[in-house]
Image (tube, rainbow, N blue to C red; front, side, top):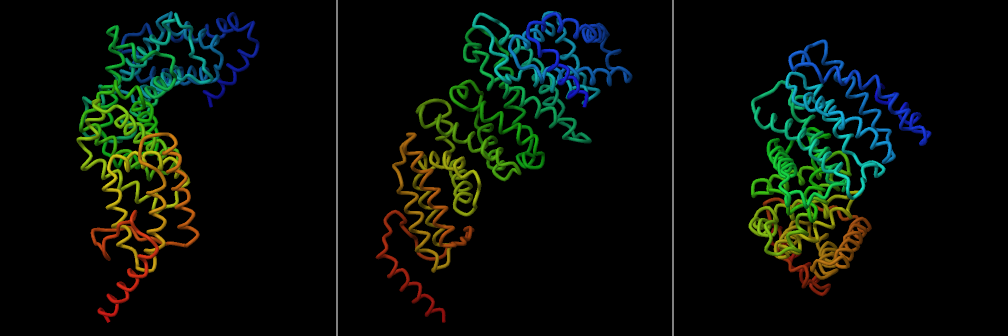
Length: 435
């Protein structure tokens, strides 16, 4: 409620653009005194029981006020008020206050709002250093909290409140920094700025820390994780991410786990992550990500293919389009396994359903050439939509294959209607032998 109250006051304050600077200075004067008094306190006094609730309140109030700032000129007023007077130091001290998770979360959430480029309010002039300064401040806060989580790996009473909640906000901060596009991230390593490298390294290490099932167990963590991965592993940013073999496997397994998230948007983001990584690997042959994907094709690629084929062939999802994009890349990378697995699916079905299923699968897999172009992707997506219609129209209730295999192997792409007669005769003969 306090955040909404101050958001409403901010809208009133900035409703008259001409009067904004003097009105802003007068409005912020009580906050300036309070923040400066808190910042002047030594660490022991700042962490006292009677001070910490006040810290949480002022951070929430400032976040609420900032959430209603839409214009670039008004955001610049707040930025100068916060950074020029070194008031951001108080935020960093709160992030480092290990004794109170509520203070840490309040500080991180303020930082998440501070870096959020809503309504393009952070699009500074070309000569302005503000974007770099914001990135450095956010990287410092994220690394401070993430470093503590990585150092303290023992058991805790409430893993969500003491770890995952803060980690989710850190992921949101980094995702907003990248998606905001107000910082020339690619040039930061060229002039020796380590803020980007440290933020990426901490993010990857945090990703590897939590077990894969926790993506579903803690929905907010899963949402923040997939949102970060979608921008972090997109081109050309993926070339800057220190993605090793263990991190790549963990990311892919997190994405597969996210397919079953309660929110459709999260599963769509997970599809976007896989599509971005595989597209980068296919388009940049010989790069680090391409070599990584190729090296793990025998296990990770087939694991992803099996999971995605089970979803698009057996389930009716509202986001089939999202699944079709990475599935196209996976079939391109391992066409042989895709044909082998769909053949196994056909073998596992009862005899009366096989002919219709083979025809639908043949239309899907022969709908386009598996070469990475936008036109081919679109044709495959349309073919997948048509497959769903045929399955629904013919009321095909399919069985998910297990380790068992039924029937003779089927070459789906070479199958023709004339083959169905002999297949039916063979099935009848097998049934007669059983009788």
